[in-house]
Image (tube, rainbow, N blue to C red):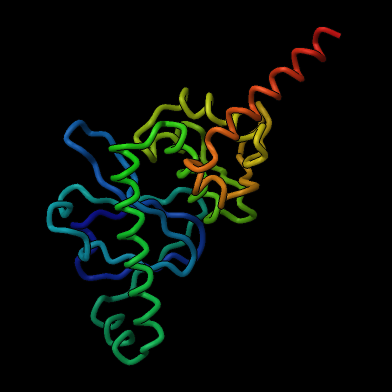
Length: 206
């Protein structure tokens, strides 16, 4: 785990795995703001001043590899390599965008939409789009409950967006794009789930 107090002199680069970056609210609850994958860079001190005492970065998988590079040396390389500077600028723009989406989700979106967005984002970061985190961990990333996630998952599965088996670890994201725009497809997901329930009911009756 990296906190702002530890990161003043270093820049962190993710080589392998998934790292979440977020904050701890007044009630002690952790909420992820964005996720980092291989080749992503983290400079905790670039976060807004209001987050300095509550921000954190935590590895999502046990085999995540993160290296620390002296801040001054890293900035020197960035100044010398325009392409690297542009790549970092794109990364920071994306994080700002993701944080804004998180705020919008928390204020306006239904839990179904929030779970869809979360699974879509995570799926793009894990190898083969197979999320190895537990249901508890996934739900916690969005400040939501495991019970709510487990109600949403069968609907996403029926729509063909994810694949998983009860009793087995891992959720494979089959259609991250649809999950990231689930608010445009929510009625279709519900209709597919209802039709699936009807088919299962007929099979049991026969």
